Image 1 (cartoon, rainbow, N blue to C red):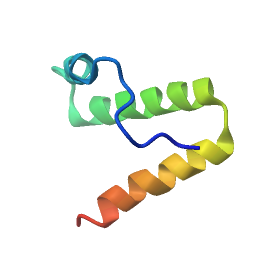
Image 2 (cartoon, rainbow, N blue to C red):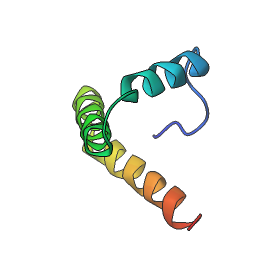
Image 3 (cartoon, rainbow, N blue to C red):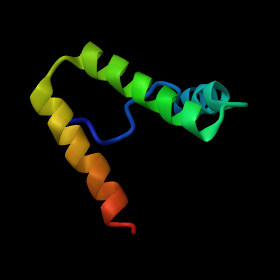
Image 4 (cartoon, rainbow, N blue to C red):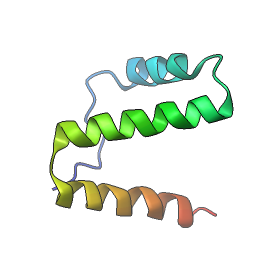
Length: 66
């Protein structure tokens, strides 16, 4: 089951690291970084059903706010 509540021990530290990873990148490089990060984390999880659920949640968060 997908955890949708905050589950990071230090969410602000992660957010800061994420922003720093994108610093000085072009839009294209930033998109490539996001894709690489998604694939690395998906591989780490390894559960296709869980990943599909995450994709549904992520898409809904974008489509519902547009």
